[in-house]
Length: 212
Image (cartoon, rainbow, N blue to C red; front, side):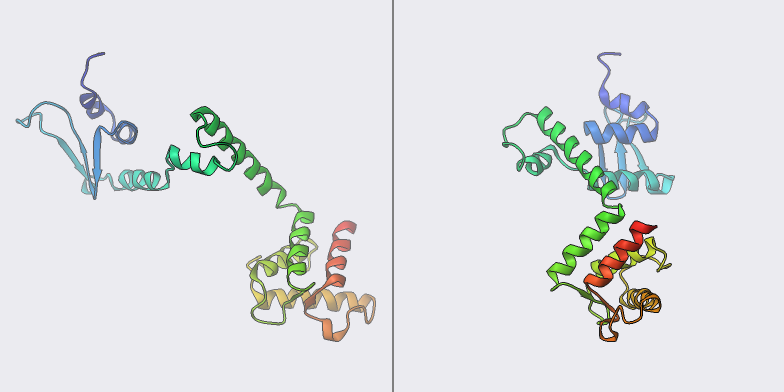
C-alpha cells in the first residue's frame, strides 16, 4: 500500500477522519458549504469526485472544522508572539518550548488570580489609580473595580449575587457592609463616606477575611 494514491486513502477514511486528514494534508477541498473528497482517477463513471454537502448530515462536522481553522495560529504567528522572548531566527523547537512555558505561566496566573489576597491587591491598584477610593454611588463607577468589590464581599458573605460589575448591586452590598460595621462601632464610617470604598473599607474587608 506504500505507493497508494493518498487521495484514494482519504476517500476510504470515515468522514471525520477524512476532514482531519484534509486539514493536515490539504488533499481535500473545503469551500462554502461543500466538502469534496477526491478519489483519484479520471471523471468517468465510478471514479468521479465524491461530493458531500451539509444536506447529507455533515453540517456539524463542517462547522466544527471551519471553527477549528478559524481559531488556528500559524507557526509564523507563534514566532511573532515569542519574539519578545528571543530572536526571530530561533528554531521551531525553541519556539514551541517557549509557547509551552508561556501557557504554563498563564495557567499559573489564572490560578493565583482567584486567590482572595490577589483580588485585594488588584482592587488596591485600582483604588490608587483612582485617587485612593472607588465611589460606587456614581453610575459610571469602574466596572472592574465593582466586580472585584462584589467578589471580595461575597468571600466574606456580605454579597450573594453574581460578580457582574453592576454598580447598583455593588453599592447596595458596600452600604450594607458599612452600615453593619457602624452598628458594631458607631461612627466608624462617616455618613458622607457611605457608598465609597476607601482605605477604611478596604482594611475592614481584609480584616474580615483574615478572621474568617
